[in-house]
Amino acid sequence: MGRFPKDFLWGGATAANQCEGAYNEGGRGPANVDVVPFGEDRFPVMFGKLKMLDCDAEHYYPSHEAIDMYHHFKEDIALFAEMGFRCYRLSIAWTRILPNGDDAEPNEEGLAFYDALFDECHKYGIEPLVTICHFDAPIALIKKYGGWKDRRMVDAYVHYCDILFHRYKGKVKYWLTFNEINMLLHMPFMGAGLLFEPGENVEQAKYQAAHYELVASAKAVKLAHEVMPGCMVGCMLAAGEFYPRTCAPEDVQAAAEADRDNYFFIDVQSRGAYPVWAKKRMERAGIALRTEPEDDQTLREGTVDFISFSYYSSRCITVNKELMEQADGNAIGAAAKNPYLKTSEWGWAIDPVGLRITMNTLYDRYQKPLFIVENGLGAVDTVEPDGSIHDSYRIDYLRAHIEQMEKAINEDGLPLLGYTTWGPIDLVSASTGEMKKRYGFIYVDKDNAGNGTLTRSRKDSFYWYKKVIASDGEDL
Ligand code: BGP
Image (cartoon, rainbow, N blue to C red; front, side, top):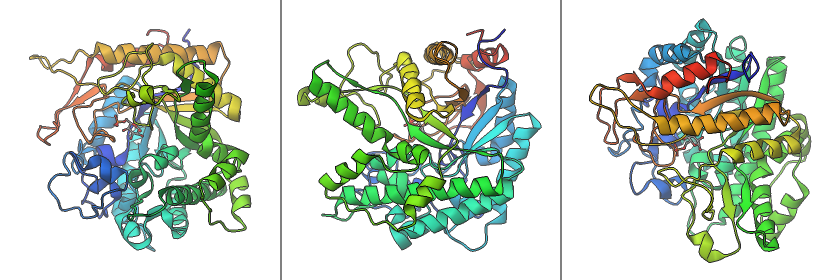
């Protein structure tokens, strides 16, 4: 007997912009993710501090081609099926469907591409889980509206959702409105297409964009329920507990505040209203949200069915500035080093127990089913002369997290719908733009310079994950 339910949705997760490539094929229009360059300008662009809106520069590799899943998806889904996947989380590229973001008529070639992809999944009994917007904002709308700073983005997004829901209602049951919605505060260009003018009130712009994304998400949930009765729509949080670095009450308070900030989006998406402290916090920061009278009702009527999240690590917080300066290389805001944890090659703390703690916090807070839609270890892999890849470090990381996940289900009694590891096939890293930061069970022959044959091969972890799924988590 396995340790996980028979219908548990084991699988993997990708994002269109990190794997599809073919950025200017099939009628696809340009998006923010196409103009986040590789190299030293990457962070200033992701953070909205540097403007780059044209796609024609040479230094956008490897993301413009990525792993060319656009042309390899049948082969890739067959490999997922070979591992026994029951679920594949993917995102739809907004500009494949609407090249300018708000075109009256959709691009049939883009719609047909995802039809073929979903059909391929169903051929193997794989349930698609679709992220509607994974760090994806059409360039045309960034130029026209300044991205999510403008309320008209809500209508464009709902129009896009309306097209997706009507087209794919027989094929897709599970939907996520925005990937890692809280990352908007940390990577505003990636999360919301925001660019800042010198002297602009950045906090005001980010929270205004957050409000519009929250309204858009709520409208999408309501619409999905109308168009596709029985469907499940989730929010998606970049999760991970904030631990106090010490038991000094000031550290505990600072960690609690960091936690609250992180849960702010999900509080709204799950409970249907802004938490009381958020209003006070915004007032203190001089943020005056522009809202419409109907927004409160929209948020109330569009609460999500389940809570999905990514989990890579926990974070440590302290009021001691010196310790905060020796921070972990964690992508989500500043965090002090946790002396009890080892880190990945990119400095992300490895904390499997933190996954169980995070799951319990999320369930206590929202009492809705959970879905882990990203987890994994970014690492450099070595291809042996015979072509094999011995990624025991990846297996160790995943095993330890699955063990905690199992405890959360069987000892804590939490409802968990599924587990999709990040990047089951190597793909372009979101934070660094690199190919060498790999998460996959499947190796892709491509390097940081964009060279390689794109050949796929099975790592040791491929056979291991296959065994885990086949035994319902018994054989770890
Ligand atoms: C999450 C994103 C993914 C993914 C992952 C790993 O924040 O949702 O898109 O990339 O992190 O991060 P990275 O690629 O930076 O290692």
